Image 1 (cartoon, rainbow, N blue to C red):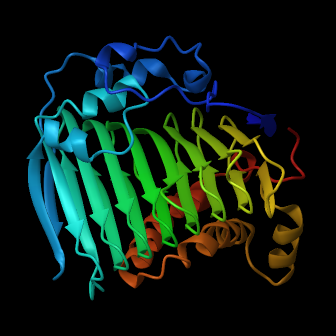
Image 2 (cartoon, rainbow, N blue to C red):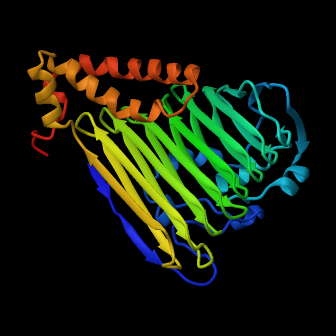
Length: 393
């Protein structure tokens, strides 16, 4: 089952959107969703309700590897609120910032890191809340890797502040074990003339729902946002994106790709680009592609543009959800490649186009290895279980 609803909306005045609730630090402003709300209608709310309870919420285990030029310290909730630039947008994020302590990681101005910053969170089967703030000083160059592993019921909030002229790659890997539930808000603020590449990979087990928000602190900022996800039987993976072009001469290029396999596999991708009245001369494009490998999967894909000005360089979006390309299969099989192996090669190529853009060999290798584990099961599936464009819908 697939759903794709491209939408272009013209807005004026203050930013209000039925797709994005008003952010607020007040816990009472966020209620438990019913599933009828626009921003929750694709979500199996019951699975994420443990993250909206009164707790108690513990702390998730965090380890860091910090190269020279980077510092790390814990701060209390009040200090974290003062440093934050993006209040919680839902009850899960509001619970995350209730954590007694937040982790603050600071990359010094003009630092050029010779190794990546690596942050690893390892969850146990407990409720946990996590608030993390990462600041990158002006004209610094850094790669930041955030890895999530283990079994956790985690409410998280991550904020990345990138100052003027900085160059930053932020790579996040959700590699949870079976039984994990992760809901979170992930926010990036891009300074004047700064360049950010953000990569999200959801490759493990468990249910994941991420609200990903980007805004600009000045003109000239550039965003390249990439993502992959592999969704298996009875798993729910949801990425909800908002890129807020609130300054002129800014750029955002978004490319997410997912594959689904097994009964009950469900992916949700919501991509929204807001172009404000003052955001002249901007360029934005977002795309989402989904590959359905078996019967019983569902992919909901909704790209949106909300436009306040026509004085832009370009704005567009695309969304596709389909099966194996029959022409590709025919070509590979005509070269003597068995059908099961040909299907696997097609899926590999579908993802590798994104993975190879990371530019960090150890992370690329890890993702390729995880992909191969997932793809191994494709060869075990019967021909009748696999779908191609020539199959009946």
